[in-house]
Image: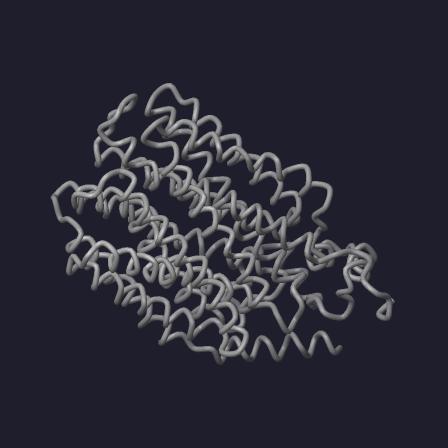
Length: 436
């Protein structure tokens, strides 16, 4: 069986995960792109405080999605959860487009973010498992450009439609994720590692042979199988991993606070600084493009240096760019700095996801990433409200930029403090299991 050539293409898995994450990124970040057309404009005429509250409440949905769905993924399987989450948030985006009142819009936004929160851990777990062992960071980095590309598409859609047609068609485009659902259902395979935790070994063997993965995927030891079947979360604090788990949670909180604070309020802050709706949204576009390019370059570098130093570089880059933005430079330089901040924001979070995916074993990978993102959503929830306070009190670009640079600097310090000794020990143990 080991000598059989793969009969199925791995590219199909990676493309479907990328497309799912593109839809994920569009639906998540479109809120910030459409705020200039929602605040003070019909039909809702919302205030900055109300907009910040809905942004934060919706991210509570993401927290619950990451926590609940991420854990269910290690119990029910990757494929089923991937398809369900994608369908859920796509339908909720369609409901947002048709919402007759601000209150119902907020409810549908909450549901959409619940689905969005559940997709990322599943897509990352699938990609990491099927990626070739020597190119995991590169493949995962490429797939993780999906959310940033989705943000670019959301920004372009807002630029094209917001002023002339309002927010509704921009949200309706987010329902395009439904087109991916049938392809994902019929073409995505189940995770061999998940099948092994369910004692479906023969099925896992057939999948590995079909995709040329025999001998390359992680085969959990019997103790890991028993632990996963009882409580996937217990392994996150087992065998000396508790300190690293808690540090990763804190780092993710700081990263997501910076990302969601900046991406939600960057267009509106720029508008209050005197830029038009189109020009203010273009800064979010620059932020998104920086995230895409930064993620690709960081994933290439991560193959050689590992994701940890890239996370540190990303945090420092975001802080430096935001601090320079606080000096009110010319518009052209402001655009460049927004792009650097995008690399240090979304690009850094992608490297954090890469680190987490490589740190935890396959049997608890989705749970580990789901819990880190769920706890991190506390920062995401705080970000829009934090930004709303800055806007409401007239802080402007200088105050907002410095305020969001602070958590990025703290994140860099915590990543420097993160020990990798435990990760290396676990990697050696996993290799020993594979040899056995």
